[in-house]
Amino acid sequence: MSRLVRALRPLVALAVVVGGWWFVVWIFDIRPLLLPAPPEVLAAYARPGVIGYLLQEAAVTAAHTLGGFAIAAVIGLTVAMAMTAFRVVRESVMPLVTAAQAVPKVALAPLVIMWFGWGSGSKIALAVLLSFFPILVSAMAGFAATPADLGELARSLSASRWQTYRHFRLPWALPQIFVGLRLGAVFALIGAVVAQITTPNAGLGAVVVLSRQYGDTALAFAAIGLLAATGIGLYYLISMTERLLLPWSSPITTPPT
Image (cartoon, rainbow, N blue to C red; front, side, top):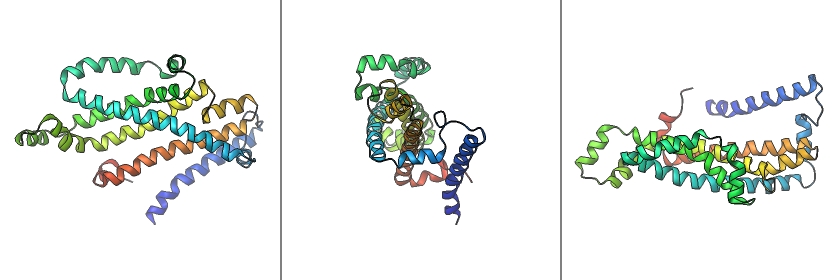
């Protein structure tokens, strides 16, 4: 029963949000061109060919997101290991990474498009830029939090630097790394969508821009709803992967009810 209640809580919250949205549209008599009511968005899904069209564009967005996320994860974890293993690397690279993170990535979108073109390269590149830093910071926090007694155990076993990371520091850091991966996946989706909005030739971001230009706000909201579902799906997919790979970490990473 408790699991059923926990499963129903997000649905109840969603119903409250949709109900509030519907009430605002009704009470203020907002025109559909500005803000369509939920039934009008559902009617957009029911149009002939719309579901297939949106799913096709959603697949493009997912490909851009996963491509950028995978690259950011590999680079972020590698850099995090190097920065925590070698002090000279950390002192040399951390100021540059911090300075790069301070630059708004949305402002870099035109430059990224100029460098990588109007195709998939610019979408993946912007997804990498947005998701890299959360993964890096979380991985570094996990590696740095390894208890001192585990380090002493590794030294007593004459473990090499790589063996220490593989058998001691990496397993201990994995719960924190998955926190960064969940955040990185969401930020990768945001980066891909921003690039698609800037160059609206493919993906759900392009659907939002083009449908808004044609005055079809209901279709734009339908695409936004599918984007939200994609983000939730990525988040929970990584969470399920963590539960499968690290069942012992659930009591640590799951907040008390």
